[in-house]
Length: 308
Image: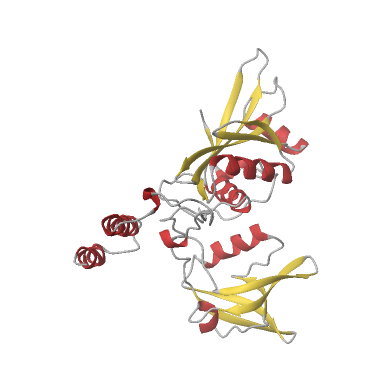
């Protein structure tokens, strides 16, 4: 099957939302479009199904291990899809997203795929899969909105961060980011941004929605420094900000399901010192594989653990 690249997607992704970021903002360890849910398989399938419905998609099928949703195409998208797929004697194209769910230790791993298909004159089905940054960025955004978390080891090679806690404020047709908190030693603090400032543009880009904001952070990541436009006491100002990439996701950043207080304690829930060391070594190995720790740092931490 052929692949639809970012340039050919033409609004097929996520309810026809605009394209953003021509690079993958989040790269998972497997390279796949996947996220972790801190709940069992049944609850995860329910959460994804509800999100499909909230997004005005149709849940086509829902089983023990997968959910498939159809995302409607508007007339323009349907015509373009028919032209791109090369058959004018067919039914209108249909767009689908499938989420495969595997439960591991009370948590669920979800991998997503998407495609557009049409029925040709003699009943054959032609299917073209989505791929590339536009699909990856949008579908991960969808999963995050459904409650998903990035897998440990996920990196963000094209996502610059400011280090602020913002609140959206409407400014005509655009959004501003009112700073509620500036993280210590962050790029924002170093650039002189303060609580109460309202960020209006990042790297020359204004934003009307979350996709536009991600597009701005991807643009900011392309150079060692970038400009941030903001308002302070209604006065327009500009700061030069040093680029800092979003750090990789660590094992400790992953939210895990909490056990009920009434749940009986079993030997499997009680860690012995040996299993504790093994778990820590496993975490360190994952961080080394993800490039967070150097080999020397890994060996030093390993020696420290084994010497306990």
